[in-house]
Length: 194
Image 1 (tube, helix red, strand yellow):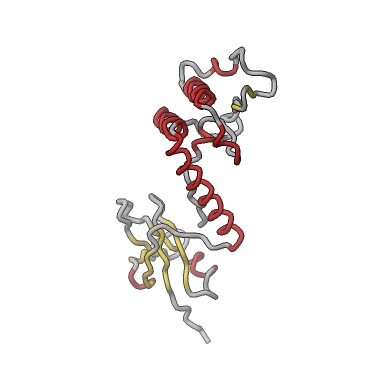
Image 2 (image 1 turned 90 degrees about the horizontal axis):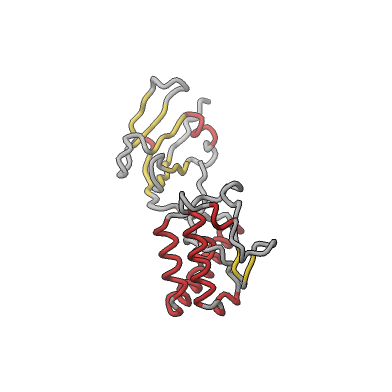
């Protein structure tokens, strides 16, 4: 069970502004314009207004601000008004933007390094023995072991016989909670039937 690596919220993406080394030269007017476009784009009653904005050229850009019309059709999630407002407040304040840019660059470097090395951080990783988990031997696909999570899911961490067989050579399996972002490393020993 793999989950995407969590990354910092990209305020530039929320406001449809490309993040580059020259992002620090964006004017307050460009950020404000992008903020208003994002509000219109994600407002349920006014979503079509951005597409018909007379100031946007055929390439979808004006003054270095890029329109992402059609992103939702391409699978981009809609932004909330709170996310848009937070993005605007952060990027329009020079000190906050400088700190955010530094944090965003560091976050992107960390993600790139994790992807390169395969080293993935698991939030709240706890290590337990298989014997510490409750066992349900009446399952449709054989026995399964489970443990409740602090998020409230009584079977948040679930391990099946198939999972154990896949990881038999390692003697451990890392599983994510079905209800939140916490992880559990389950250690187990394989009995030799010889």
